[in-house]
Image: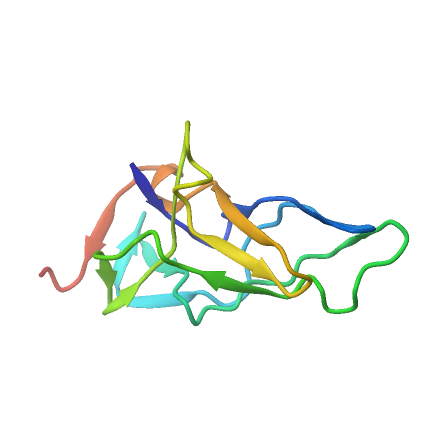
Length: 133
């Protein structure tokens, strides 16, 4: 089952040469839906144009300046839209990394999403579309 990626969703670790970029929450600038609410707040989702926060590299001894800048790499969700936008999804359990969307860091690593996801977070997993469609 696919889950919707949100600001607290992490991506995977990346080790490139002498630099490690640890898993890190997406944060940054998600798309905020004007009429879809999850747990009572406007849905903050990641579309292809969303810009996640940069990942701080752990220097061993040097990381490429700006190497932790991230972009979204979508392609797993091909038919579900929020406000006419395809959005990032991820899965849990066996095969989760292969079935999850990713980020790409400027230094050259593809980082599958690992959770936590919006629909799996408490309190009530409630999705409301206002006005109803």
